[in-house]
Image 1: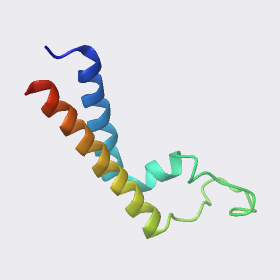
Image 2 (image 1 turned 90 degrees about the vertical axis):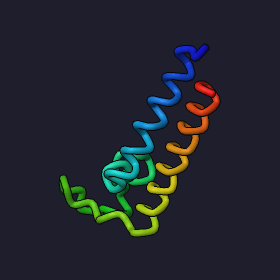
Image 3 (image 1 turned 135 degrees about the horizontal axis):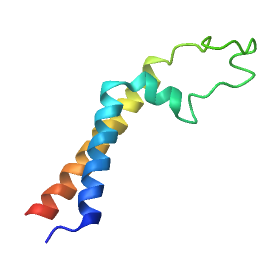
Length: 80
């Protein structure tokens, strides 16, 4: 019998993984790692943040794939 906890884990993992794959730049900017700091953005003007590096976007995509893999594993265990 699949419980609410398993269903929530599957849904949240799938949503987070899909979001990381669909919009990695937005996820990076919303994370603590992509936040503006005085040393990176001394002007402090709205919308003047530099673009995330390709390496950072690749890391966000890798986290998305990992989230999807964990959600798939939990779904497999819950419904097997």
